[in-house]
Length: 469
Ligand code: GLC
Ligand code: CA
Image: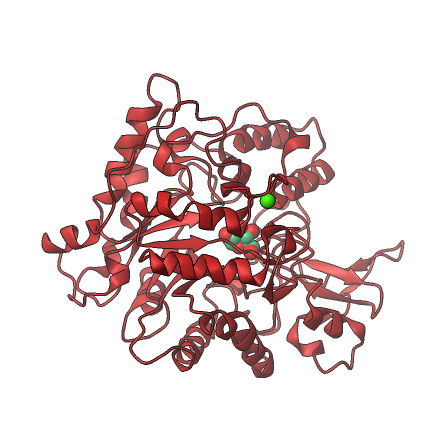
C-alpha cells in the first residue's frame, strides 16, 4: 500500500474513548463524572494511549445520554463543574495526553435556549434555525399529519407536532433532538462560536464530529420512497446523508477552527460519517480538502444487521466481515486521506461478544485476537473503555431495563405497528440481546471478575506501521 507520507501526531495516535456516565464515579452518586476521569489519567497513560475522546458531558436533559445538548458551554452538573472539566484537560496535557471532545451539532436539545426561542412564535428571529413545517393535512379525527414520511432513527415519525404554533419540527433522532437548519448562516456561526470556539479556547485538541454526514438536507425535504409498505414511516437517509452542501459546511467549519487556535497547533477531527461511497470518504478526509482528518465508517459494525432494519439479525461470513472492515482504510491508498480503525464505541456491543466468543474459556484469547487485528491495520486506532480488558456484553436484560433511547423508541414503534406478540418483536428481542447500545454503556469493569489487559502497550503503533508501508 502506498500513501502520501505526511506525518501528523494523530496518525500515530491511539485514542481511548470514555463514556463519562459509566467510567469512574468519584463521589459515589451512581454516575461517573469528570473528576473520576481525571483520577484515572495515570491508568490511561499506562495503557500507552495518546489521546482521550470524551463523550458529551455538556448540560442536557439526557434523553439520548447527552447527545441532546441544552448548553454547549456548560457541564452537566452530575458530571461536575466547568472547573472540573478544565482540570481534566490540564491534567491530561501534563501527562502528554491530548483531549478530544464530542461535537454534537446536527441537532441540539429541545431545552436549548435557541430552540425555546425558535418554538416561541412563527416570527421569532430564530424560527428558521430549525426545520418548521405545517401539517401535510389532518386525519379524520383531526390528528395532524407530518410534513413528510421520514422515520426517525429511534422509531416513529421524524417530526414532532408543536401545539403552540401548530407546526411540526424535524428530528431525525429522538423527539427531544431538533435538527438545526444549516442553511441558515447565522445559525451556523452561532453553532461554531458556542460549540467549537468555546472549547478550542479552552485548549481541547480536537473533535469527534457526531453524525457529521447529516447536516445538509435536500431542499424541500421530499418524501422517501416506500421501501417497507408494512410501516407508516420510511427511510429518508437519501435526502440527508452526505447531502448537497455537506462538504461546503465542513470546509467552512474547519476554517473557523483555525481562527480559534494558536499558530502551529495541530488539532484533529474525526467525523462520524457512517455510510457513503468512496468519493464521499475521500472528500471528507483528503488533507487538501480541509474537512475532517479522518472518519468513522459503519460498514463492519453493521455486518450481520439487516440493511433495511438494524434490529433484525442476518447471517454473515468471516469474508463479509473482512471486506467490510477493509472499506475503512483501503480507500486511502495513493491519496492524502487518512482512516480510522475501531471495533467498539458507545453505540456498539462489546466486540468479543459480537465478533469473538465471550465464554469463560475463550473470552481472553478471543479479545486478544481482536486486539491484534485492529492494531495491525492502517489507520488511527480507537479503543473504547473496557475493551482493553475484553469486557463482554451483559446477559439476560429485560426490555424494562433497557435505557438507550434507540432501544426503547424502536420497541415502542414495533409494539404500535406490529404488536407485542409479532414475529417482528421476536426478532427485535433477539437482535437487542446481541447489539443493544446499552452493552457498551454498563459500568467500567462491572462484570469482569479478574481483569487482565488484552491489549499490548499501544504507544506509537502507528509509526511502526508507517515504517512498513
Ligand atoms: C451518534 C451518537 C449516538 C447518538 C446519535 C445522535 O450516532 O454516536 O450515540 O445517539 O449520534 O446524536
Ligand atoms: Ca458521580
